[in-house]
Length: 399
Image (cartoon, rainbow, N blue to C red; front, top):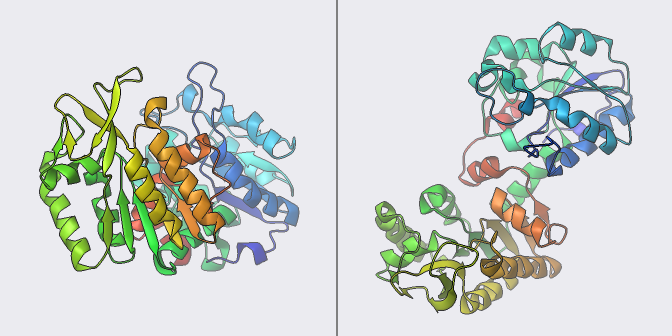
């Protein structure tokens, strides 16, 4: 990892790629969740405390055709200023134009400049070298602190590294923490190592499951994807979610796990509903004997008990994906119970990493985010990391 903490940024302009892609209220355009901005503050503060200045670049949303007001990073300025203790945050209405260049050149020690949305230029996502070079001229050093975009070879997240010598490329504190937490699980995991994999589709999680078969002792499978496994084993799943084109894949995963002596835990029972709605009628049923017209929307009480016991005995826990439709109150019991079990396991000395948008939302919603070892800010990036892929944003700093 980089030596960010050991470097003195005095009199240097640090060009920092942050992930300020935060949700905004559609009407007021106010920030509804500032987790990602808060996560970048320690990196920004370190540079400022050293006597350096900070130029921040980020994307926001998915603008299709150039600038759009609802995707402007100007909506972030006031909130960022508050998080920095009331410090003035200068804003450039472009990221490579004359105003950006001029404001960056005049920036004094201790000052902060936020550039306009990088994705207002198609060149950003295309990884255009000329665009990356223009960005690079704004700062003396480049800091990548955007783990959420580390799996993208975009101009600001990877290509820009070419224009800074290795000693002037750094991971920020957030990026360091993310990579260290992921490495702890992937390469230094104490056993028993339990991976909890949830979510709707097997197809989204095949690669992560296959990679974890080489490392985990136990894999818990919940959420909609569990019913593809149930049907593959010959069970009746009613109208539960199922990927019929992945039944053979599910069988192969179960066979590989058996060959490698990895225990795969599927939910013995489910909370079932007669429709996908908050006001549905509910019941419990064995997960492989769900009546026609009913669907599994959460793990049942037996599954909660079995899964919780497995988690509590673990020394390393990775959690990616919910156990059910936790957004609806009737179907959140399973996910909440898993959050409690992961928190208890952590308290007993296990290292726990929670990653992936929905599982992070769940631990935040239930108030367990400070009771696990690490909560990742990168959904897709963390998923690809655990699939065993090399992330361009990490490789760019290391090369």
